[in-house]
Image 1: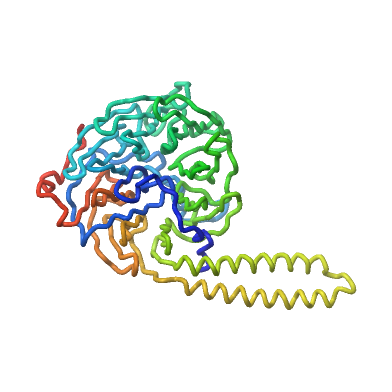
Image 2 (image 1 turned 135 degrees about the vertical axis):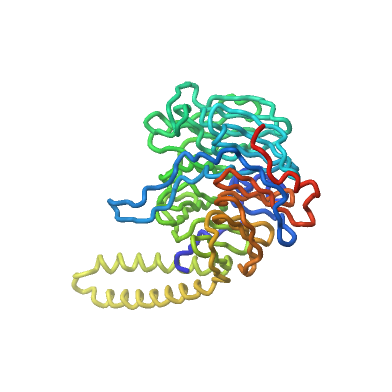
Length: 475
């Protein structure tokens, strides 16, 4: 349990308005990327329909090197795994997703799986679009940011994120030299997005007017790329940097505040301005508090779900639940003790070898021994905050739908009761389930084979759904 940390500190998750009630308007439901919805499924779901692409997703990065010879680290984790499936967003009875295989954004009927409309960009669309006030926003490898009318796919505006239209070969395609490889955040009338992969050519963080697409401000960084899903609080933008560590920027100006310490990766979660990210080289998540660049703590795991009274850690082989309140109290105590230890150790070092300080050094020694005992006691008590831990063979993604943890694995998804972790239900899926969304009384599963499945409770499935179990990818 020592690998858990005071990142469990915050209960509140800042979210897109009403995202957690019914809709799923952006990747993982909100700009904190919480993966949490209050909506629940009744009973064991069934496959209502399946939409299948003619071609599977074409990820920008196929995977990590097998090992890091310089540092002798083996079995490296992929740190740029943001586009291995067509991630779905949902509003009402409509589901939307982009494609890295055929450059389209599609709108599907959530009850039948039928395509309502599709829209072509001029390059792969690698990240989920964002829904906001009846409009759909997304970026593409063609270097442009798009705003569509969500109900009919009509183009409202299109803006090239970097004014220069220079094209280069990329992923067996001709793409912009400044592709849009992050998601779009829409907040307070502005669209935030980045463009560019190569720091030497400039990586642009841009704010656009949400209504017109005109530029509000621009900041250029020349030391880090930008790839993955942006996160946002009311005051900060968090920019993932692929294998590098995220940058924290002021949302009003785009100016960089800091780059946090860690082991890199495009997975990230924001809870009350505490940033959790990874998975590093070996499946390690780090946590950094607002106002700090240094890690607060790190622990082994792929993903985390945080709720008001519990936290769930999801790794390659297990999923576990923690009593947040009690753990937080003990974590604060441990932190205080550790600080006292560091101060006393520093003082003892300064007195070493000085005559006439024997009594003071002995007193410090006793204080350190007492602090060490208190630290061990707090650590043991923290271990007892573990509510449950169960094996898991579904390591690729996790969300919380009502009182059910839904996990994605290879050729299977599963639902576990959040109060116990015991097996609830499982269903086969075609491929590796990298994407999960929940809305409209359904779970939407996205796989690496280009499948999008709708899972519903049997009582909620409509009779017509079975006739649309295999829907073509043609527009």
